[in-house]
Image 1 (cartoon, one colour):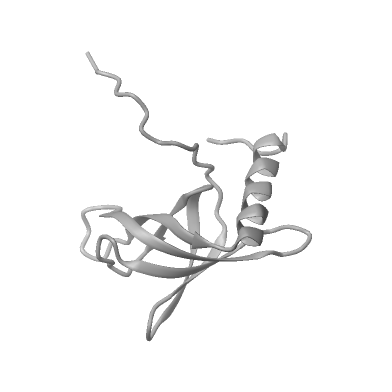
Image 2 (cartoon, helix red, strand yellow):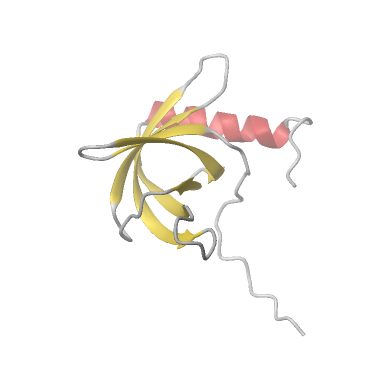
Length: 122
């Protein structure tokens, strides 16, 4: 018998691969989101981060305006995708700073995905 725990998430996650850039002090990495919500996202990387580390991210929203969303985010969790030594990490982040115009563009994009009949989660 499996016990079903109550959902702790405040927002649903939408599985969508959006191109994004992570910027550090002396490095930049291109990757894609695995899922996204109004308050955070999950992505895959070969770079290891510290819990609570602050990251600068740029997310590219595919829209008629080709919006660039710049956010500051905090690493909430990180785990290896497999037991292999060179396996990438899944990283979950929480958005801690975003301009209002960027937040509005992100929310509009997420709403459009939810209401678009061609979007299907798997």
